[in-house]
Length: 508
Image (cartoon, rainbow, N blue to C red; front, side, top):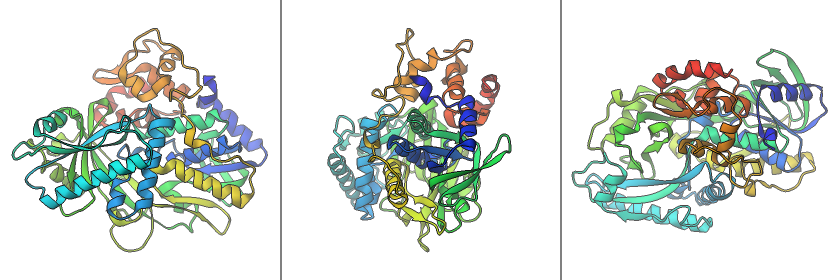
């Protein structure tokens, strides 16, 4: 029954009109990032009536600007934050083994042992990796899913990261973490799974005048506004939470990534992991990604002032990332090698002074004087746990009739055990399609009505025409930007975007 997961223009129109005419619903969620869709899924699977509204598109904000990692929480151990480290490892295991095994895989992380790295730093990394193995075991994630850390020789290090500096290379330390094929695809999968369980997922709908029991909604496409009543209203708008509820205080921190052609790094298999000089638990990662790219990140800079829709990397951040990665490379990379860049804002809880890198990544559920519930802080890996926490609060505070949380064992759309019917494919499926859609990949081709569905959208880009159509018919894409910047990540590289804009227009 694939139709129940399909998000598209017709469903949006029908649900918007039902919401405008309808009775009081149990839960209204504001924000269509990973936390918001996670809350919608949790509420729907507990048997609550739920609507989610998002002013822009799914994964429009921070949720598409992450490092695409499902962290085991290693860096939190270094700061003594054992609770968040343990939880992160547990949530990583749930995602990799139950919720989304099709979207998360084990990513090898290589720390090269170079002369610039002193004995104390090496010992610290080795100890950290061993602690990470302990966390993985504690979380019940088997080594077959996430292999154990180990030391490797220089020859193997060069095979994994061909452009690593060879002079004085004494091998490397290798560990594994979870890596998403794409963060925005995870958001889409969670949203569609919520829809499968009856949630209304409404993009391009702005929320204003939010209180604990009512919100004014404005359809950004028609301009029409109406009031909705809900037993609980949850503000999950991330870095914009303070705009929905002025009593919320956040301290945004900017994280920037640079995008390279993977060939610039010799088409690496492992993420080259370089300790930031003078820091005990921070690294710069050069991570192999889909579409033949490497993403280099990550910075952690204070970002005061108004919140931009699309944050921009600064020249200083670009220089810092290039300078740091070049300490571990045989070939120096320069600004001309950078083919794209992106920046995201972390919605950190304002704890006053100090560096943003040291601010806790814990989340908090706060209630405003009007009764509006806001979830602030937190990190992508813990989205499911955060959603469970918010819903537990809402059920208790508002006396909602709901079952217990069920998301721990809930396979998302595309996971092999999700009951969305998967048609057997007569044709051999491209590996890239399976990586992005999992068990649903045959449906993408089977559902296509366009000409030449299996043809690539452009030379050298491994996205097929059927994917553009599916974005519109099943994944709620309403604009060219939705298709190019969030359902696929072609838009990260301007030259690629230019090649496919006209193709994307065909499907709208």
